[in-house]
Amino acid sequence: MSLASVILGLPELEVERVDRNNAIAVYAKPRQRPCCLHCQHPRIRIKATYQRTLKHTRQGNQLVTLYLRTPKYHCPRCGRYFRHRFKGIRPRFRASEAFRLEVF
Ligand SMILES: [Zn+2]
Image 1 (spheres, protein in one colour):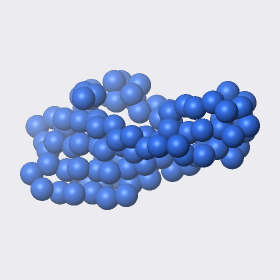
Image 2 (cartoon, helix red, strand yellow):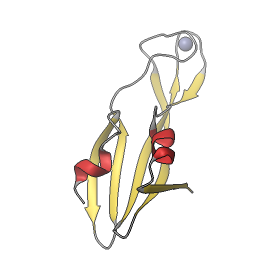
Image 3 (cartoon, helix red, strand yellow):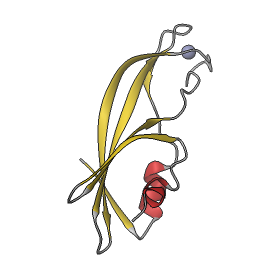
Image 4 (cartoon, helix red, strand yellow):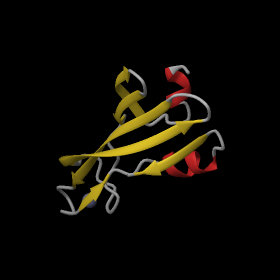
């Protein structure tokens, strides 16, 4: 399985590292910082970063685990906090028959 097939369909992600042992671990983060969800302010700050673990099981193949760095943002204009929303990840994986996604 190529790296391209792992990240295909996740254009918002920037892959930082891939470890290949018995399983494949992909470390990724958002490619771009969004505007504020509440007031569309373009210059928000990262307040903290969490790691989300998404486990894919490729049919009859190797296990792929995606470690997603998920920033929590603070907007200096409206003062609100929100987490990064990865567009398309969960609907896309749910829709795929080749992958089964579990969120730990
Ligand atoms: Zn705002």
